[in-house]
Image 1 (spheres, rainbow, N blue to C red):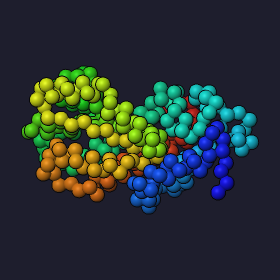
Image 2: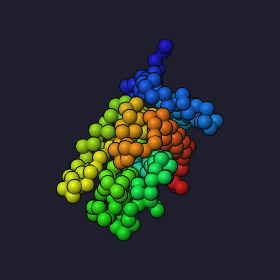
Image 3: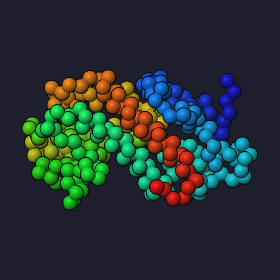
Image 4: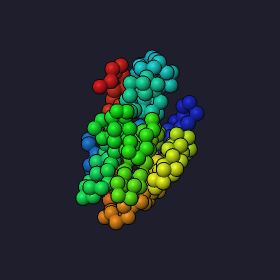
Length: 270
C-alpha cells in the first residue's frame, strides 16, 4: 500500500491506531447496524485524518490557507478539531460531548439499580448532583469537598461509595492509557479517598476512558462490572450488559464528535 505522508505520520499509520483498538474491542462492528447514515464514513475518515479539515483542503488545493477558524492554529488536523482546539475547549464543545457520555452512563446505571432504592446515583450534571449549594456529587452527609467526581454511586445501607471519572481522549491505545494514568494519579482524588478512609467509608475509585471515536479498552468492561458489584454484590448484571452500557455511551460519544466536527467553522457554539 502506498503511504501518503505529511507532518511526519502516514495516513496508514494514523489509521493503525484506531484499527488496533477496533481489533481489540470491536465497538464499530457491534454498533454498525445502529449508526446513522454517513457515520461509519466519518469514523473511518476521522481515524485516517482524511476529513475535509482546513489542512487537508489546502493540501488538496481546494483552499489556499490552513488555519483553524476558531483559534488560528496552523495545524487544524482532525485531532485538533475533535480534542485539541483551545477555543473549542473554552466554548465547552468538548464538555458537551463529555456530559452527554456521562448522561448515557448514568441512565444505564439507574436502570441497573432501579429496584434497589437504597442505591443512589449522582452525576456532575444539572438535577443529578447530590447537592447544588454548594454543587457536589458526593452526599454532603458523608463528606464535604469541593471536588466533584463525574459519577458517584452510593449504597446508603452499607455506606459504600463508588467514584467514576470519565475521559474522552483521542483515538489510540496510547491516549486511552495516558488518560487513565493521569486521572488515576490525580492528587485531588487520592485526597478524597484518603478522607473517606478516615471516615471509615468503604470506597472505590475507577476511571473510564471512551475515545472521541467511541473506542474503549477491553478491560473497561471487566472493571466496570466488578465495581458495580462492589456497590451491591447481589446485583443482577452480566458482563454482556456492561458491554452494552459502554457501547451505548460510545455511540453517544462518536455522534457528539461528528457534531463537533461539523461545527468546526462555526464561531458560535450551541
